[in-house]
Image (cartoon, rainbow, N blue to C red; front, side):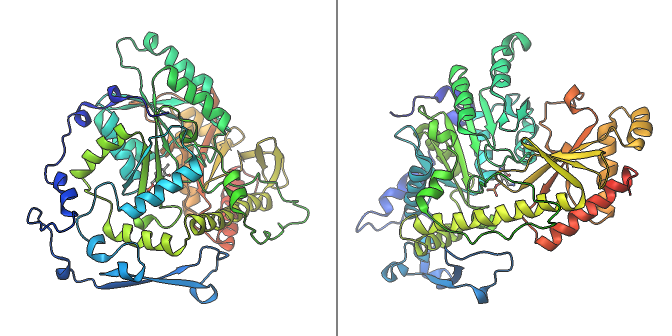
Length: 513
Ligand code: PMP
């Protein structure tokens, strides 16, 4: 089945884009025997770059936190100006030249194969297109679909940069209640069903922005059954789903609280690898269930290789891909030639096919499990913790004072900690009597205390979906605040120290020290 026509979702700006006339000549330039005097291209002999050499980890390297170049087996490759003869898949003469807007052909084919094997889109004629990472990808999607003043459906807590893109356009978020599995389908259905009555004369939202795996900031992951429910509702109300999924590969097992009596967690088993089992273990995406071409998926190499690549890709219907291509021609032109060259050669060196890259991803995944466990274990060590269903409930050490809770994430990089304020005397007294928004005021105070203890975490209010104005808290949000703790960028020693510092501040602030 092919994608259906969603052109009625295009913003007027996107619908009005015409091809850049010079870009339309590019296909002739590569014709055999053509002498081109048409484009303003510098001759490659005038590029100062002749050859770059890279040393990289082999895809199967075991990556304990202290991996260094000396104790791992390195692969080497070159990207030479005239490299194709040496078996390279790109050469610098073309890699650093003005290039096809959609991306380098070799890389596009690789990414297309990756999408086909890993996501298995449910419609046939999906297209892929490189971009400069998901931030750029999302910005182009906003341009593609949004008009000033539009309402955008999104998780109640979301990634702030994505909102910062459309807030200046006068767009507003429609926050959707979440549970441990992400957006609640019943809430989405009700919101759309009641929209016209609740907002007479206001255009119904036609975009759902969702971070389905290891959600930023809450860490939750949406199972495929929930995705299917949400997808069906989006079909019913004609909503385009934007699946921003940078943490997709970082999926883990369920966390089990370590025995506090033992006081330590067993070291992780050495990673074993089976490609089919690895692929099987990954939750199905919105793209996998998309039979209509209603999903725009954003993937990025930021978390799977390095953010500085500024390289990612869209998967979407040909109609959306073509409109994004037009917008790319007149903005970023193409993803960086350096990034595409080096990443292409790396993926090639890691071949054959997708094999090496998948192996790398599985190794990466096992490193994030270890980091997730370090952080959760550190809470169990510094506080009294019990596991109840999905949640870990955390009490002051040696007390029954419930300080916080979290759902150990099964993907991603973040622990979303919910702090209970009602048993804090300062909050219950001074803050509640003197502040209109005591939770936010106390969150700020607590955050500052934590900074003073030399620990930087991010305050929950940064992630609240923007509704165009500050709304009063609903009952479920009273007397609680959130903090987001990233377990990605740390060593075991640092994470232990971090949670020790946090415990010091909380015990002191609750008078438990
Ligand atoms: N989307 C989400 C949900 C993210 O968490 C991040 C990174 N923090 C990004 C996009 C940015 O990704 P990129 O580096 O590819 O622009």
